[in-house]
Amino acid sequence: MITASLIARADEQLYTLQPSITPELAVAGQYTVGVQTLKVTHEKQLDTQTFTSQKDRPLTLEVWYPADAQAANTPTATYENVTRLHKPFSLVGKAHRDASPQASGQFPLVVLSHGYTGYRTIMFYLGEHLASHGYVVVGIDHTDSTTGDVDFVNSGFSGFPSTLINRARDQQFVLDYFSQDSSNIAKIADTKDAAVIGYSMGGFGAINTIGACYDFNQAGLQRLGFPEEAAKQLVPVFNSCNAGRESVDPRWKAMIAYAPWGGETSVHDAKSMANITVPSLYVSGDQDDVSGYENGVKKLFEQTGSDNKYLMVYENARHNIAPHPAPKVAYETDADLGHYIEPSWDNEQLNRVNMHMSLAFLECFVKSDQSKCAYLPTRDNATQVKDSDGKLSEAWPGFADRWATGIRFYHGANAK
Image (cartoon, rainbow, N blue to C red):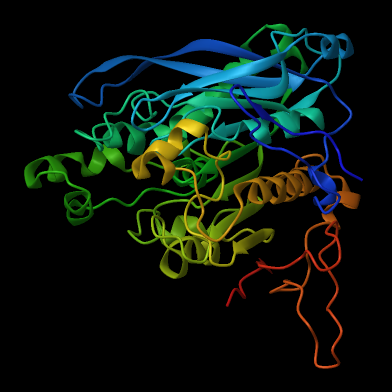
């Protein structure tokens, strides 16, 4: 069976066909999806220009949610953004702009957090997909850290201090905001059962949000480019636990970290990592040249104390395992294309596997749907291979036979 395209690009098709080999849980759910853009303010946050005062922190949010079924008769949304080199592009999604949300129901809140540099819709395929299966998903434009904020050519790390300080705090703020808001979307958002999904620096923050403490020292900050005296003064500023809270917010029921940064530089305190209890899924390429694998993402996975921890590894993939496929304009320069493309993988296939496994994980640990837990491989190194008798090993649950390849999966502490 061949189904319709997942996403279309404004100037051409972004995803062309969804073939029958698509993992089972990557197929859209029962809900029509709406999307709205919100402007919110996190008041009295640390001014990361001076580090001595406070100022209000504006945030732009993209919110996907189960919509009124009649929304299907309205046009689909366009997502506009810029590349790292500030070249504008538009993508057409499957969601319906400003559609009325479902009149009733409770749908778990999922926070979606981009990397440095990125934007709130860089994983819009995942936001739309989860919403179609009954989640309210909130993508954050992390102020100072987006492609629009940062002059990648002339001052590529200008927003990095803000990223280190605010990534987890932004995630926690979104959960708090929707628990207090009175909008029609907030009324159907279940903030008592929430999850956070982060990519790269979003994953760095997500680990802190669910319980890790930062352990920046002066030498580490200097390696990141801070002058000696500034690094010395900023150590206590940067170090915090639980997104700046005294303890982990118990509403966080699951965490997914795609290519999270920080393992190679040991910025997460190992003792606090061992105390994490939130179910955690790490996703990495085994050739990640930004966050690292052996001493990076794999290390973070191994340090995590949760009884329910998983690691999914894309063989021969580097860092770009989570973004939507590159828009046409990104192909004009290596600097932009390198923000999206994977040399050994088709990004469309990566997106579909991400959709499948993210949904399985959230359904299992946020909605407590035991039938979906069965989609999480239980044997380590579960890539499909030919056995000594010449027969293929069993495919992953939800994957077509012969197509469960190129991906390794680990449950527990035995990643090799």
